[in-house]
Image 1 (tube, rainbow, N blue to C red):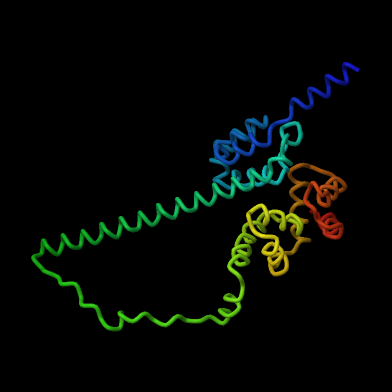
Image 2: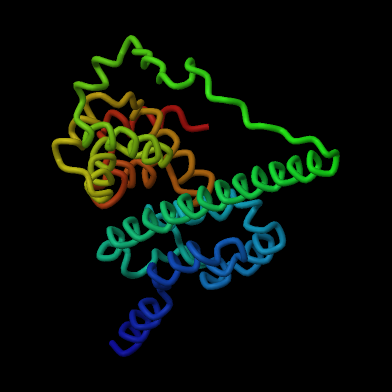
Length: 256
C-alpha cells in the first residue's frame, strides 16, 4: 500500500505547470527556456543557439502549449491546462496585439523622422545655393476630394455588421491552428466575439475540417509517436480536438 502511494505521489510531483511553461514560451521562448523547464535540455540548447529556430520554433512551441499538446520529457501532460487555457489564450492575444501596435508606431515614427530629415536636407541645400524656392500654390484639382470608387461587393460589405466582419478577421488567425468546427467556435468566443458572430463565421468561413483533422493527426504521429488508435481518440475527444468521427477517420486513413 505504501509503495503504491509513493509511486502516485512521485508521478504527480513530476508534472510540470502549464502556466509556467506557457509564460516561458510566450516571453522567453526564443531562448529555449520553456524547453529547459520541461527537461528537454538538448532541444533547449538547439533552440537557444538558433534564436528559437529564427522565431518559427518559438511560435510552434507556443501554439503546441496553448492547445494542450505540450508534454514534459517523460511524456507527462502539463498540470493545470483545463482551468487556465482560456486565460492563456486571452493574455496571448492581448500581448500579440500590443506587439503589433508598438511595431506599427515605431515604423510610422521612423518613416516620419526620415521624411523630416530629407526635407531639412533639401532646404539646407537650397539655401546654400542661394536659391529661394516658393512652395507651389495649391491647384484647384487638389482642392476637391476625388469621388470614392465603389467596388462590386461594396453593397455586400455594408450589409454585414461590423461585429461579424471583425469575427471573420479573427477567423483568419484561428484557422492557422487547424481547429475543428467546435474548437473554432470556442476560440472565437474566447476572443470576445458574440455567439451570433461566431456562428456567422462557421456558416461563411471556408474551412476544410477534414484537412485540419489530418494536420493535427500528422503532428501527433510525427511529434509524439502516437498509434493510429491513440490519435483518433485524441481527435474526437471532447477534451481534445473535438473533430467528428468522419473527420477523424479521414485523417487516420490519409496519414503518411
